[in-house]
Amino acid sequence: METIINNKHSLTDSDITEVVKRVKVLLINSNNEILLGYSHNEYQFPGGHVEESESLIEAVNREIQEETGLLLNVDNIEPFACSVGYWKDHPEVGKNRKTEIYFYEVFCDLKPDLAKVEYTEHEKDGNFELRYISLDKIEEELINNSNQYGDKHGITKEMLSLLELYKKNR
Image (cartoon, rainbow, N blue to C red; front, side, top):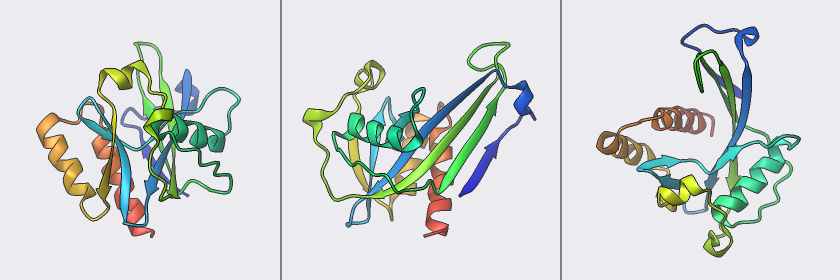
């Protein structure tokens, strides 16, 4: 597994007051398309926070079910990458957060079941939707979307880095 570290303030683990773990999934079908979420004018890989006492794999299964309505029950997959970020004064002054985002690849031809999704209020407010995009055109789509709407949270930059790493190791 490759690790990408973002630590512009040179924080150490002893500086950290909070650790947040997330999982993200590159859900790819046999047409070489990737399924992405789109909300608040930003793309994102399906996934989310790992809940307390939940394994990474349990979080993958739960998050995919909540965001796509698909019950995958994957259990033998390993992350291909981890993005570790050290954030000074985040989410507020005096708190330093470390984020660990584990990225998985899952091949699946099942179609999302929108009758079974469980979107958060934030996702609903952003008109969350699922979009298939060809892996051959994903970078162009992300860049065009970022140019039009901005990259407010650095998600597009992170996605482009992960896609480059993913394609390099395929």
